[in-house]
Image (tube, rainbow, N blue to C red; front, side, top):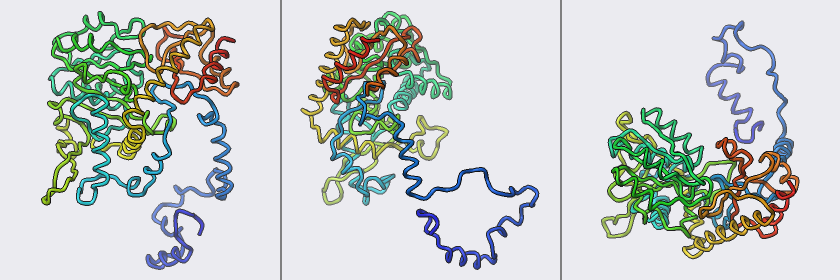
Amino acid sequence: MTFRYLPMTDQDKKEMMEAVGITSTEELFQDIPKNVRFQGDLKIEEALSEPELIAYMSGLASKNHNTKEYASFLGAGVYDHYTSSIVNHVLLRSEFYTAYTPYQPEISQGELQAIFEFQTMICELTGMDVANSSMYDGGTALAEAALLSCGQTKRKKILVSKSVHPESRAVLETYANGQRLDVVEIETKEGITDLEALQSAMDDETACVLVQYPNFFGQVEPLKEIEAIVHAHKAMFVVSSNPLSLGALTPPGKFGADIVVGDAQVFGIAQGFGGPHCGYFAVTKKLMRKVPGRLVGQTVDENGKRGFVLTLQAREQHIRRDKATSNICSNQALNALAASVAMTALGKQGIAEVAHQNIQKSHYAKQAFQAKGLTVPFTAPFFNEFVVKLNVSVKEANERLRSHGIIGGYDLGRDYPALANHMLVAVTEMRTKEQIDQLATVLEGL
């Protein structure tokens, strides 16, 4: 057998050619003039045997700096968190990793219940009434929240803080461009949304205000003050939130948020070079019929037994797409399952404990940096990320850190020219005191 995953033998090939009345595969192309056919061999390398190919690909993979061998302080939306072994144990069961669309509840109860549990846990974390069964990632969830807000308010102006993740803002711009919506970015002041600038930008055409909590710089936004400004103009309040942080911070639902979105990567989902991850989308009860994607509901069958079904989905998402408020009709069920298993393994107390460890270790790192004479420019409360100012470029600093077995932080100068030579440092529960001290010492040496 020539190809391991194409189980066709030479005998199979011979029988197929006999069935269609040819003696060679060349005859399949006889209708194509010879002068336009490619003659000769393609200039590509010879195929490798399977052992040779594995060795070659392993060599390429070994060139990557990974979090198993390096201490990672890189966050900016994708984080190195502890994942219990039970996550992959459940995830790799064939009935889950081969499942796709659970339209037929009579054969999909396991998948539907898993999704329902995910929705329930997201509601508990965010303080919202209803959550869907997941989105592609945090960025698309935020953009979908903006579209929902514009459809609900019949307005076209979207205000988004510059402290929201730059990639999420880029996704938002793409969505808004197609819908001919106006996106206005609100400046930041000392690492958080400038409330005066927000107040000035608000008007009767504003559909929603989008903020991140904690924001891209790791700072905790003043949601209470922002909510008062937003709802005074009858706009919708959208919060993108790291769900792990909600194990310690007051959930956005308690501050009157209309929509809460985010990325569940922090719960049991591999960093995966940036994806695939799992977005979540939670709303108040009055918006539950406008939620994009899938919703799983709990019901009872004719015998009174508990069961689960897909419910409240707008048919436009599947059929009348030109009338749809969202064309997302799929989700990240497998990654949502990973998040559900991770949250279940941790439990309520465990999630709170991990969140507090992130706070404690990142604040220890800030103190260690300041003790070494490094400047931490922002003073607002933060979760597990903060900004440090360097005397050299972040690129140079990260090259030096890698030589010490450390993956450094994110270069903020890439997205914020005013923050050149500023590094966004993420400190999760995975980092040890020794690793944090080593990071501070290497940066001091620069």
